[in-house]
Amino acid sequence: MKQSNSRAVISGTVCLLIICFVVTLTVSGTRAAFKDKIAEQEWLKQQESMSRIIKADTYEELPVEEGEQAYLALDESGKTLGYIFVTEAYGYGSMISVMSGISEEQVVGVEILDCSSETPGLGQNVAEPSFSKQFKGVTEPPIVTKTAARSKNEIEAVTGATKSSTAVADAVSEAMNLYRTYIDSVE
Image (cartoon, rainbow, N blue to C red):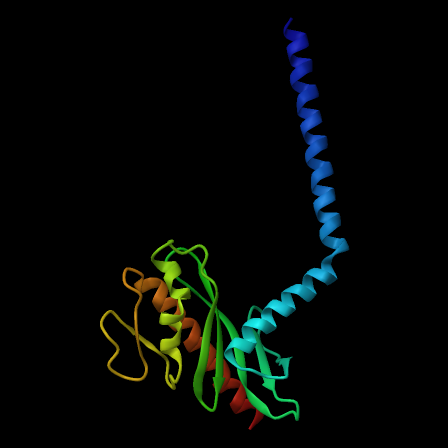
C-alpha cells in the first residue's frame, strides 16, 4: 500500500514538472516571437507620455549612464524644444519612476510612470495631476513641504505620503542634474 502511494506522489510530481516546463517554454517562446512588437508598443507608449510633457515631432535618445533614459525633443526643422529624462527614486515601498521635461533651465512637465507599489490611496496619489503640476516652472531642485508651498521651488507633499512625494522630488532633482550635465557637455 505504501509503495503505491509513493508511486502516485512521484507520478504527480513528474506530471506537474512537465506541465510547468511546457508552460514556461510556451510563455518564453511567445515573448521571443513577439519581442519586436512588444518593443514597438512600449516605444509608442513612451512617446505618448513624452508628448504630454513636451509636444515634439521626434524624440532622439541621448547617451546617458546605464539605468537612466534621456531624450531630445525636436520639432520638424530639427530645433530643440527641450529634454526629457526618466529617473527613479525610492519612495515608501518601492522605486517611483518619473518622466521630467526640462526646457530653458526649467521644468515644463512631470509625469509619474510607475508608483504602483506605493500605498494605495496615499503614496499612489503622487500620480495625480494636482501633485505633478506643482513642478512646472521649477528652476532649482524642488523642496517638499508639508504645508502650502511659499516659493516657486517648494512642492506641497501629498497628505500622508511625504516619502513618496520626496521620492518624486528627488527624481525631478536628478533629472535637473542630468540636464545641467548634458548642457555643460555640449557647450
